[in-house]
Image (cartoon, rainbow, N blue to C red; front, side, top):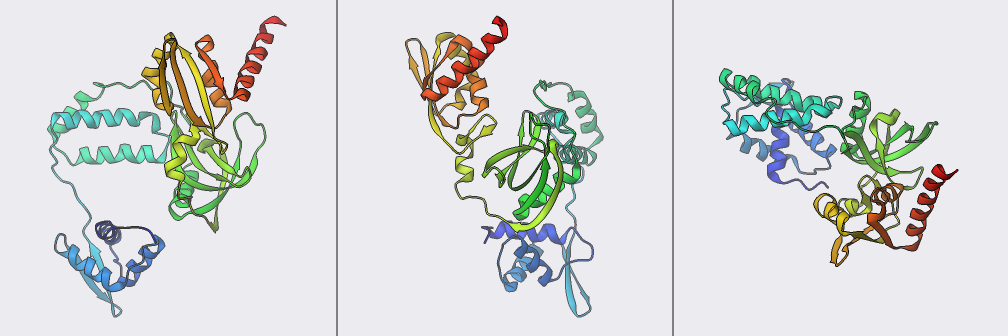
Length: 327
């Protein structure tokens, strides 16, 4: 059963009652809660409605010997914002610019403008003034072309814990593969919308870029997210890529490179030890191509201490690069 507090349950009921003018019966509300794995009896729902009636207007309508409940829509009128709040709204609009191809990005942008539509004319003039006051470097963001139907089905899958079958073309491949995945969550990596989930084809946890999903079908089969997923996900992943075989990685950085690591990349480490020559970077993670590329970018400023097979990978990459210039 989903752990939902009384307050969360009552907000859910209030939102439900406000979304349809036809209204909902107690049985309807009970069924909607069950779909979210929230099991409460109908007497509890009646008490919730009585409690909500004390703070907002809930109407009752008798039709065909049934009682239908409805609630007024939430409305925001004549909102007044302070200057810092208006600057924050302008900041949020700037943050959302790279995500206009995502359904969530467009909806978020529309929500802010809905707020502004319900504010005063003076505030709307101020927001025009503040727009452009803050600029954000979006060079790292990717202007992905997304299919709204794919996004919608992924939202449905994650919400209801249903598997999906996708046709997917991975990076560097010229062929599509058919996969069944268990989507756990959506994430944004460098501006690209991705879905993180268990891939039954690879028998591993993978990130799938949504724009590379060519086709998607929602299946009836359900799944459960592992209990330790949310606590362990960040430590299995190095920046973007993850793997199940976790090893202790130890890298020595010289003084010059150590300054960069400490200022920009320190959060990637599990532990950093300062030394006379720089720092020792320690991290428990999977050895992926991404990790190898990350180490190579520092050139002579980085040296792998362990494990030995990671050292071998670095040596092989350097030898292959040298061949490009000596052949």
